[in-house]
Image 1 (spheres, one colour):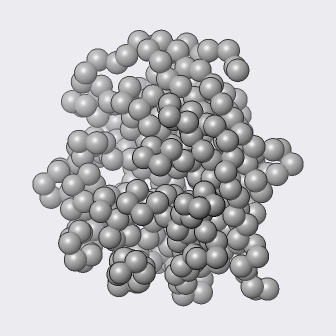
Image 2 (tube, rainbow, N blue to C red):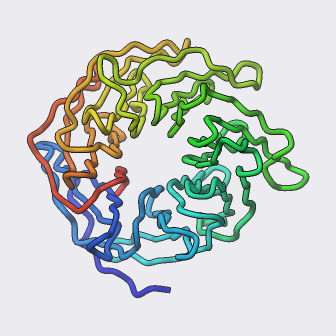
Length: 357
């Protein structure tokens, strides 16, 4: 395995920790640790820098980081795992990924599985984790190109596993489709034959979906049409119950970015990368009703991703084009966010997550 990388000791209690993923055109270090002052919102770069090429997405659970490199097939894309200890970070595992240009990874601790979505080829991969949540083996690869028409090209953009039903959900931007694959206990894989497909309007370009904790509702952001779509599980069949503009009163920039629920599920937020805004909606997680509340400037250019702290008091935005990471204070009662005036500049930030540092 790689040589351990030194990091600073654990941060003081008033500091929240984040991991930031960046494209790496000029630096070998794609993952960075950041510290957020939970009193002022000031951001500081920590000593932790992990050498990995173009980690456009990663997931973090406790002390484990699971990341992908968004590289083409001829550069051998892989899933990487790192373990954060008190004073160092170790690379603990890696596996090859099927297809081309992975852009998403998620880890499901309950089912001990990790999933990746390959934008370039349309593949979705599933990996088994052991009881310590270390990468164990490649389980399954789903090739969506066989489901594409002559006019379509598959671009898998997200793949996650639902906790309650152990269903694999894939979001395909190129096919304008969500697919739901139930787990087959007998064959120990996700069933392609018994999948449900939820087709969207042509040109929707779905990007990411967020599910409520009870997994009865999903909130889907479409990148190309910039539509917000609410889906509902009705007797084990997913249905669309609402669709509206994700960024009201703006021109369609065909660049919807990220979507995140607040911890209490009373609000959710979306980033418009062309408009440079964060849009906020109120949400009723009993009925699926959504209402736009406001939109605010993201504090930079091209908000690719953002993260909300576990206590709901902070929102941090990664702006790709001006290389800025911006902190916002969040009101947990009315959902309002306010720029703290603090920013940090790191080349091409594209993914950000809070973690227990």
